[in-house]
View (spheres, rainbow, N blue to C red):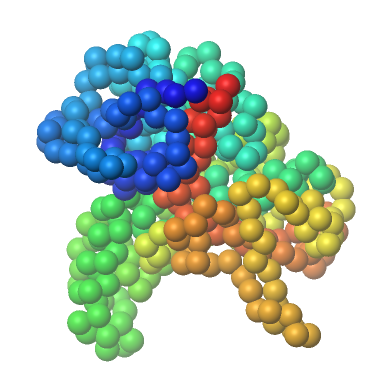
Length: 351
């Protein structure tokens, strides 16, 4: 059926992807979509199919006659306006962290737990964190086959995880440091100190930051706690052991994760490949280059701009027959945000 759609945060990085995906996936939009943003963007126009749509200011009464509202404007705006949109009759799909751990709000990865989208007593469905999302796609079929009990995960998160400002900060820092490559080689501390970081804790260009997000309980960051708590909720495994380390890397778009997965039963590489074979939203990219095999593995750069999560470096643990290692990469603005949001909207429209 056709539905009246609103996009909150329509001018942002994820909002741009939401608009593109609604068009490219031929989402059944009834009439013109409602594009909402801050007061400073109100009155501007954004392209939509064969024309343009004027951006409106996000206000409490902006959701009249809206059936589905896609939110990507930050947690504060979601907390303020998502309940109002739901009260007005819209089903809210929220891309922030505002409602992810609310017991009355389902946390949905379209390929992993689509049935959860139907249970939404508050009228709100939450989109998981972009890092959690990438890992859940291969974790689900492996969990179903072998019973996932523990995860040791190290993420490699792109600058774009912080939005357009993160991308712009990385590009600006890179240009500045390229002006003196010798400093990068012989006095890295001076190079790092030569630029005042605008977006991240330290300069990200030509660097790796051993944390992503803000530090919270037990010296873990909020990004790491999201990986812990959201994985448990999505897979429905309350006691899942998760040991996370989230790292920021100088990549524009594309998050990657190295994960050691431990199961209730023994697992082999061949059995894992069989379990993941044909699972939607995933592409196996795995070859060592030995014995005539193609050398192939996932990279965040290769994941940028595609819908599928890339999975590779699949190998058995050297000591534990119940553990498996793999490397996953996915576009944090697509599957990690906008694509899953639109997929959830498609579930709602088709229900």
